[in-house]
Every structure is written in structure tokens, then in C-alpha cells.
Amino acid sequence: MFKVALTLTLALAFGQDVFGQSYFVRGEQDWEVSGFAGASVFSGDFHFSTPVLDDSPGSVQQVEMEYASGYQIGIRIGEYVGDHWAADLEYSFANQPIRFKNLAPLIPTLSLSQSIHHVSYSFSYLFADREARFRPYAKFGAGVAIFDVRRHSRDFIIQGLDPLVRFHDSTKFMVNLGGGAEFYVGDQVALIFDVKDNLTGIPSYGLPRFGRIINGIYRPGIDRDGVMNNWQFNAGIAFIWD
Image 1 (cartoon, one colour):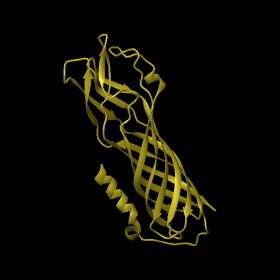
Image 2 (tube, one colour):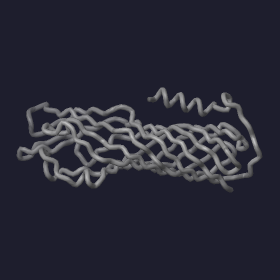
Image 3 (cartoon, one colour):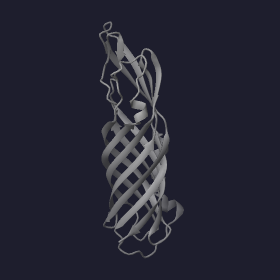
């Protein structure tokens, strides 16, 4: 996944040398709003050896988390700062269910409906001049990712688990890196294509870092650790004005 994304980013960054470049006179247009849609993909599954308290010494539960790929939509509002820099505020929504494996001894698999909301503020460096029709860019930024478990998934009692267990939304700090390109089809309209990696920590979903047996009922946990790579592939349309 990383190699594919890197190849796409480099192709967009140096695309003017491949496809040729054309120029036209454009005024000092400083603002842009764009809508986009595409795919949201996680890189790999996650495996955690979670200790179990009140059991035999050294007991662990091997918990796995799998994220499904899903569609994504979003909106971005940006401002050009000089000839080669831009800043933008972005919101995106992705539909990506999650499946737990071995969350509890009596539950081999458990699937939950989930949406992921990303809110970020990013800076872009555009390699071509403002008058260029094809403008590749690299970008970086930071924000938050909200892992939103749907209400119908978190408000039911799961047989074999402590009835007090509820899954909750999780919010994680996020850093994003990526690149893309704008292709102007008019003075104030451009097509956009980009790829981005959102890096976050592992969400807890309201579960502790250890499992526990209470009155014969298992209360699950996830001894989470590491970084998640959430790749986004988007295409959209932008409107530019001064």
C-alpha cells in the first residue's frame, strides 16, 4: 500500500514533466472550496496480546482488530498564501466497519458499524506557478480523527460479556502527509486528485488495556499500542475566487 501511494504521489508531483504544461493568465484568486469523494483504506490489521486479570498467572487474550475499506466524502476550504503555498481546513467522513476477533473467550468475532470523521488543518506546497494549468502539490497537517461507533452497535448487550460493557466513540490526535494535483479546466474551476496518509494512535472504544473476569463474566480489554495508517484516495472539483 505504501509503495502504491508513494508512486501516485510522485507521479502527481512531477506530472507536468510527463504530461506537458500549459499556462494562462489568472487573477489573484486567493480562496478555494472543494468537494471530494473516494476510498478510505487501512494498512493491515492489528494484533494485541491483552493480559487477563483474575485468571491464571500470565494469561492473555489474543485480540485482533480489522478495519474494512469504505467510501469517503469531504469538503475543504483553502487559502492561497503567495505563489506556492496554501493552507486549508478539511472535514471528511468515511464509512468503515470494524471487526474484533477473540475479543472474549466466547466471542470469536464481533462486527460493529462505524464512521470515521477527520478534521484537519494542512499546509500545501504547490510546485508550479500560479498561472499553470496543472499544479501538483505536497501537503502536511494535523487534526483529530473521531471513531464514531453507531448507536445501534454500542447500545446492545452482548451475550458472554459483562452487561455493563458499552463501546464508546474514541478521538485521536492525527498527523497527515500526502500529495496531489489540481488541473484547471477554467479560470475558476479545477479538478483535484490526491492521496493522503492519516496517522493516529489505536482507538480504545472505551475498553481498558486488560481483560478481567468478574463473577464469572468476562469484561474485555485491548492492550493497544502502535500507529494506524489510514490511506485516503480522492478525486473532486474545486471552485476558486478572490
